Amino acid sequence: MKTRSLVSLAALPAAALMAALALTGCSTSASGTTDGELSVVASTNVYGDIAQTIAGDAVKVTSLMNNPSQDPHSFEASAQNQLALSKADVVIENGGGYDDFMDTMLKAGGTKKATVINVVDLSGKKAADGELNEHVWYDFPTVQKLTDKLVDVLSKADASQATTFKQNGEAFTAKLAGLQNREAELKQQYAGAGAAVTEPVPLYMLDAIGLKNKTPEAFSAAIEAGTDVSPAVLKETLDLISGGSVKLLAYNAQTSGPETEKVLSAAKSDGVAVVPVTETLPSGKDYISWMTANLDAIGKALAA
Ligand SMILES: [Zn+2]
Image (cartoon, rainbow, N blue to C red):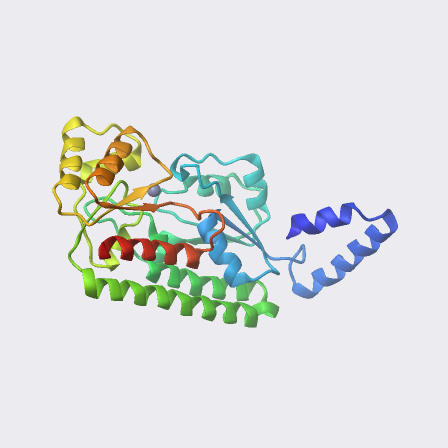
């Protein structure tokens, strides 16, 4: 939004530019913020999309990670990211070790006093067996908590838009409820069915549907961490795929490597449905259409 208005200002002659800036100055004091526009910075485009949906077009939202072909776990922040963060009124980070660069940049200073929302903290989820599954955006109750939090924080930051934030939050909540209903329907039909994953990415969703994750823990943990998979663990995983006890393989398309590709081709040749999943928002989708597509793909795999 801001970028667009700067580009159009640049095309104006000097006198008109002065007038335009004066007008901007006018609307600034009305909204009560220093630059006239609330700014939200999210670590990934998943949270950025949710924030934009709830905040509406009058709020500038910046997502630091938004490349669908990049592995978010190895993201490195830039000076440009630091600059965006320094101007933020509201910051959304995942937490749980997923996007530690956010805290690093916030501590580095130069940041105006932003309200920081940590979604893992908000989720209330705790580590099970010493391992926290940090992919909490696949958990709709957590996204609901984030929605409520955003409405609250944004309304405090700019009370003049509170009605808009509330209405957008309600509309988004209704769509989240639809997704949760879909999970419940699938659960009724398919609870107890086996599933395999290359990484823990979609596990909150699979859990909500009542699917049993049968993947050897050592496999998905190694893939997630980018460490080597031992031949024994790889064989155990391939045997699981060919053994007929899993209905689907949820495959993280953002971090493929030789081991996951072996598992993928085993699934294809053994007739196990493959459900591609990603960590960040695929291009052309918003959060709701993305999660709807994930549930459609899982439903189709289970029905096969
Ligand atoms: Zn991950």
